[in-house]
Image 1 (cartoon, one colour):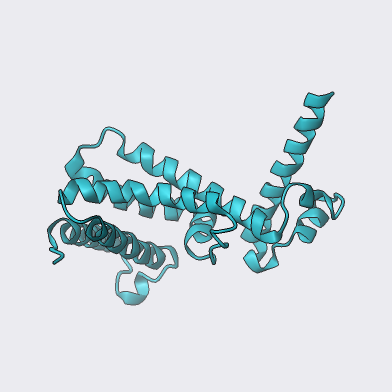
Image 2 (cartoon, rainbow, N blue to C red):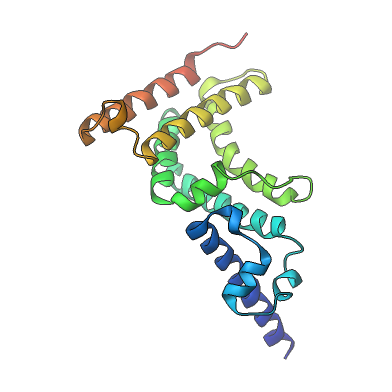
Length: 204
């Protein structure tokens, strides 16, 4: 009986998380509330509060799962890749993930981050994804001050994020790149410049 009760609790928790993600996908993050989750699941208004103390708590969990999925995706792409190829592979994997998983990408990159002091687990999940890039930058650049390595990793992360946003919102034709072949060439050249900048740019 105890195992069955625990299973029911887990089912309700998972159902709440799935429904929260669905609400965000269809109506936007501003429409997420625990009351709306319970209404759409047709359960008691208090039921979600047994698993999540606030709207922010369930949002942090949904975003955290997106980061988990993103991290595993990147890890799979660079497994067994030579050190000198890690940065370009990570960059292209970032673009691929953003294109194939638009909801998770928006959650990670376009949603205001819940308070990390109240939800430290979320910060750890975000750091795990960033650390894959940070470690690749460290291996590419060699020995230097940690803050310099982190700055270059942030440069790469933010620049690829901008490229992903441009490709995701269909802005390529608006800047004169209507042909898919031209777009692919442009993306490749931009990625080459990002990787070159990370590996060669000195920080004094």
